[in-house]
Amino acid sequence: MAADRTLPPTPAVLLVGKCLKRETGNATTLARLGRAVRSGGWEAVTQDPDNIPHTDALRALIKQHNIVTVLGLHAYRTSHVLLACQKLGVPYVTVFGGTDVNECVRDAVKREVMGRVVAGAKSLVAFHDSMRDAALQVWPSLPPGKTWIMPQAVAVDPDLDFDVLSYMNAREAAHVDNRVHGSDHDTTTSHRENQGGEMSVQSAGRNKSTGGEECGASEKIRTTENVPPREDNGVTSRNENMNTRINGIPCKPQRERLSGPVELPALFQPLVLMVAGLRPVKDVLYLTEAWSEWQRARGGHGRFLIVGPSIDPQYADHVHAQVSRLSGVRVCPSLPPQECQAVIRRATVLVNSSRSESMASSILEAMALGTPVIARDIHGNTALVKHGHTGLVYSSPNDFIRELECLLQDSGLRDRLTKAAEERVTCCHSLKTGKRASP
Image (cartoon, rainbow, N blue to C red):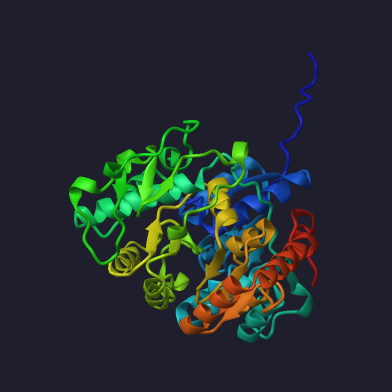
């Protein structure tokens, strides 16, 4: 009888981090790290820490997948898994997520838990110098060579078939429909997120028609912010694929791949885009009052689009309630990554207003796609955005409005910023450079 020549299973790395909602920055980072692990000849197994509730669950995973090391993204959110690794004698690496060293350390209990995680880690990884320095301030006894710098990396592949104009029309229709029915929420948000984010906005962004005549006045969308729309001339989300007029501006559905990017109507310009999950640390309302006043003064032209999943339901309810009284602000469900990148590509500017960041994927994507960035003056943002060189930085809402106006009035500034930003991403944040780490 021939001897059993079955090869042993390939050694695997367990990647642990919050990833149940795939449109979050953590999920994007874990996917990138998984690709890097697999390119090195290892298997990569990704799990949300909530799916590994105790040591026995971790032991079973290790046995099932031949896991030889664990990588935890965020020193606190993955702490129970990493502390279980200590019990089992499994080596692990801790990747600082941003809010762990910027926010969680303010809580004495969380800081003590993270201290045990950090002390037992084989190595620690930070995305930039200021994050490493923040960790060293909290835990000054860390050995100098234990913490490595590995910049975030990005690869963009926007869906060129995604019709951003139809998507914007659909968001306006949903806004009108919600106002007619007295709802603060985009009615598509809860449906999409109850489906786990898997449902694409097919009717909103993938128009299958090849054209058609412009619609009549009966199909006009009423969007005057301070006048409640009448039900008879509102357009509901069921009409998203129809040719529409918005405030008298004809908007034909078109496919970007066939005809090139379609100029967005004046109603949507400038298109200020924020990609962020709805949770307090993202502070998505920080700019909206100032924007609303500025937008009203421009006759209602321009949209401030907040795109992202609801992470904290109570905060999300607060955001929707506040936005319902503001002019030109829309809160939209999260999009699949390629569709979101298509919207970033068409935006006038991408903004970030977080109170804390590690190194935002949306900023990197905008820089790679040639969309200018205006970011709040915090360490994680300024590690990427050098004011006046690779983007613009603001320290207050009024400061943001001034920077936005500078960008709108100076096309040369826009060109210089986007060129330098693209060069920065190619040089320092491509997938190839993202594999390298330095002490």
